Amino acid sequence: MKLNYKIPKYLKDAYNKELGLYEVALAKSDFTNAWYHLERSHIIGQSYPIQHTYSHWLMLKFGLMQKNTKEVFGQIIRLIVGGWKSFINHVPIGNTGGANVPPLKRMPIPNDIKNLFNSK
Image (cartoon, rainbow, N blue to C red; front, top):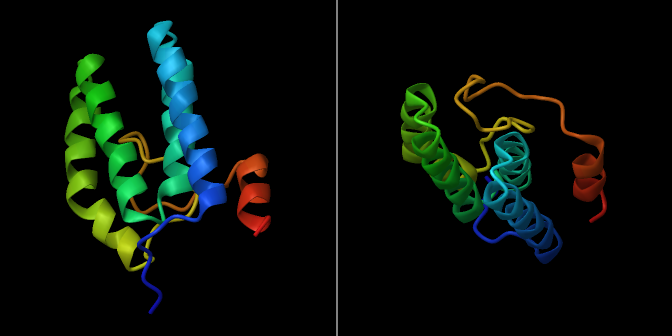
């Protein structure tokens, strides 16, 4: 069994870029784009416990900000189980991480992220 504990630099850079774009959109109250970048950060980081958990933490905070009860409860559940599933490499690839999708559903990966994954 492969254990994931450290994200490779090239993925960490892409993950951090998405988080930066999330912060910019959030500062502009562009909530649609902010959420979009959180979902992308989740896709990039979901195989690594720290990044996966942090994406869900930000999604929880976003749900609280938006007063979205479904999102808040969905993120609490994901925070409880998401990190350890990353550690043992058992995540649904491509899942965007929001409470609007089943937590175990595999989803198509955006082409640019797919290219990033295939670059190393």
